[in-house]
Image 1 (cartoon, rainbow, N blue to C red):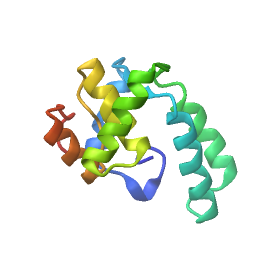
Image 2: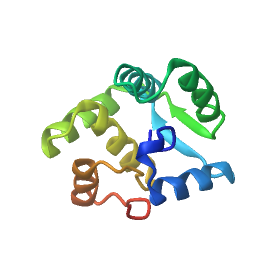
Image 3: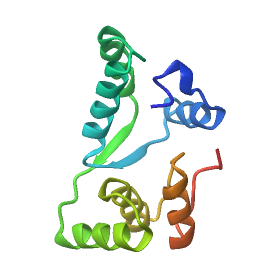
Image 4: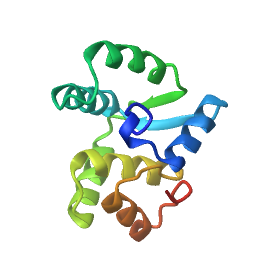
Length: 129
């Protein structure tokens, strides 16, 4: 959301956006679109963005090379539950960590708890924010 909200501009997030615009891909869990939708809804409710801006910004966001992982294996579910329990994460955040671990990819997040869990789990992080 740092890419979409003027009051949340961070150089690290901007560099990540530049990489995506240059052709790098991001892999996200299947619930990512709902999380993005919820963040936009909350931004509208809090007066941070009007609906027309959300509709405009979301079109740009969905043009980025963001690939949705549609794994629905019971083992994926089990690992996400275990990770959430072990590191005190939400199931949503645990899904990102599980995906990064399973695919042996670095994790891109600004969330401190998730970054700490990734470090503890031995998952590499995209350059520090």
